[in-house]
Each structure stands twice: as structure tokens, then as C-alpha cells.
Length: 220
Image (cartoon, rainbow, N blue to C red; front, side, top):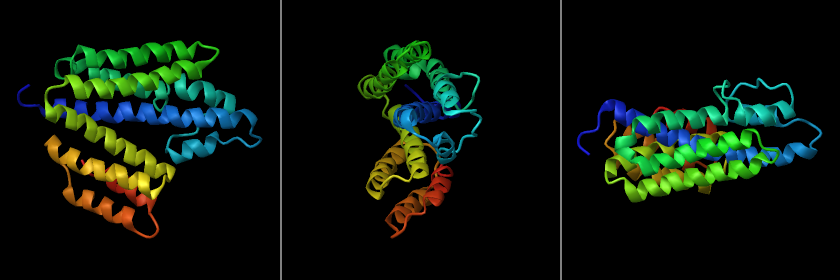
């Protein structure tokens, strides 16, 4: 493809972010779903606090049903998947119909999960389709810049979520080191000093996770 417009760059970036948000939050939901079955004290409030979404749920059963599937809830997994699709459909020419099809399949499986008596099975297929989307993007998208913009969004979202969750230094460092070359080759406007700041923050004896969230959200 030729020159990528500012709007296309923005959509590619958010396609990367939303697809990663769906993938990681489904994995988190799986863990929460299992833990909530036998817990005495509800943990969903802590889950909401960690990923910085409002706790609008009345009970753990309400959370288990509405957090993944309520399309009227802007913070639900389904809403984020729909946002990924909204960007992907506009970018059909940039990413190709085959790449787009895996986001469409993820929507299909999320709809199946919504009415299923065993929703985790269909939700696993959603994550499989997100992984396939990333894989086919590598294989089918000819433009290196397009691929790198999507992956820049993906990495920024992952660092954001991982910092909120307080993951290990090793995992965070790995994602920051993977972000640096991607964002450079994406040719989108970014603050290189913020990348260097992330590297310094993750090397500190005691990691300031809140600072990492603040810095990663201000890179672009």
C-alpha cells in the first residue's frame, strides 16, 4: 500500500490495542470465573479496580454474566471486541479479508458463548481466533508498517494491563523490550524518552507500576 493516512494509523493502532485487550481480559476472566465458584468473599470488585473499570455489578453472578457479554456496557469484553471489529472492517483493504475474517469469527464465537451453558469453551475459541488474527496478519499483510502499527498497539495495551495487574519484572521487561523496535518501525509519532523511561522504571529495585501505566499511556 502507499502512504498511510493519520486516520488509518489511528485505526490500526487501536485495532492492535482492542484485540489485545480482548485476549488478555478473557484470560483474566477465566481465572476469575474459576476462583469465584467457591470463594466466600467476592473478588470481582478487586478485579475491576485492578483494570480500572467501574464496578457496576450487583453480585459475582452478575459480573460473570455481564462483564463478558453485555454489549451496552462500554467496559465489557464484547464491547471491546466490537471496537476491534469496527476498526478492522474499515481497514479491510489494508489488512485483507482473510485477516478480517478472524475478528468476524471471534464475534461469532462470542455470540455463541453469550447463550451457552458452558461459555468458557466458546470464549476459548475467541482467544484462538485472536491468536489466528495476529498470525495471519504476519503472513498476509505485505506492508511492514501496517504490521508494526498493529503490533505497537498490541504491545502498549499489554504493558498497560500487565502493569495494572502487577506482573513480574521479567514479563514486563520482555514486553517493553519488544515494544521499542516495533514502535520505531511503525513510523507513528511517539515520545522516545518515554520508552527509555519505561526501561529505567522496570529496572528499579522496586517497580512503580502506577508510574509505568502513566508513562505507557502517554507514549503516543
